[in-house]
Amino acid sequence: MGCRLACNRDPYSVKNVDRIIDWARQQVRERFGNAQYELHYTVYGRDGVMGAMEPNRDRPAHELAVLVQGIAPTREMAEEVALIGTRQMFYARLPEVKGTAGSVAFPLDEVMRASPAYRWTINHTYAVPDGLALHETHMAMVGA
Amino acid sequence: MASTLGELAKTLRSKNAGVDKVTFDIIFPDRATYEHVKQSQVLTRASVAALYNIPESRISDFVEFDPGNAIKFTLYRTVPSGSPGDPDIFGAQQYAPLLGVEVP
Image (tube, rainbow over all chains, first blue to last red; front, side, top):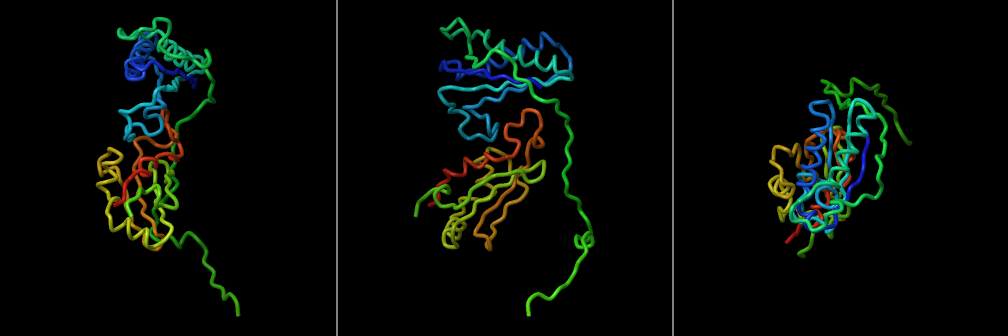
């Protein structure tokens, strides 16, 4: 997995960050087609922490930080997914934006590497007819 | 005594409950405050669903726990904790909207 940050300050870009993300997603789709990868955008300053449950989603902050995460079978591909998925946000052109030299601000121009990850989930609860049967029980008198 | 839950609660938190749920605890400092909030009915399955913009079917449990002066509810996650794109893998910051709930 590789990840990067891309940030918005132009009020119009803040309002239309989903269009910038859609543009970048499309560029990644054109590069990798149906290859196996995942590309996740998390928009901090709008609904980064709570997603669809965020009640203030329609009132984003004046600046946003978008975390871009690329996941793929190999490290090289994951980093390229993250790289293109972020760099193309820079190139996204919304017709109403006055700035023409970059649609996002980068705190650094490289992909941060994350450790390989494996997806497995264990919910360690188990229904038993008699919970006490799993444990030895001892009775003791305490005190005088 | 019009106040917010953030002002009235002693502890107001969210955390993972297993891999596919997030649980919320709203604990009050004393019986009187707890009873006042409980009677006000500002926290119900319906109000939680409205606050979090979710169907009531996402709420697995909702309990008013008198011995602990606490109201507790649990939501099903949309994806298991730690799934790609999960923004809060410990469920630790999901309680914020509760802070501003007004109690008449």
